[in-house]
Length: 62
Image (cartoon, rainbow, N blue to C red; front, side, top):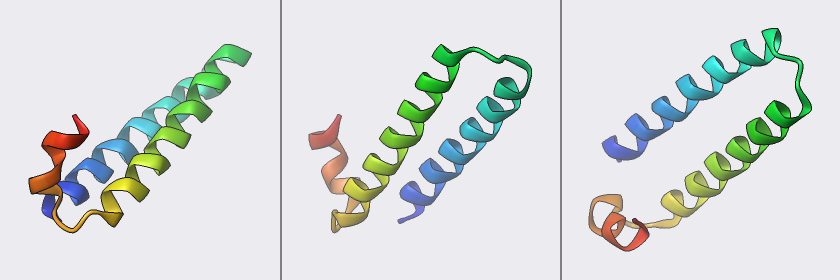
């Protein structure tokens, strides 16, 4: 559970930094990459949330 929390904190910090970049960079490709990262972050959150123990199953994911 601690590993999931730390991973989510990393994702949040990364998305916040990307949002600051998007304020200064008005490029459609940057927006596409940004929304892809949001989708994958949500996907991995759902996958990791359904696992009983992330410490045991992370070798299967990566």
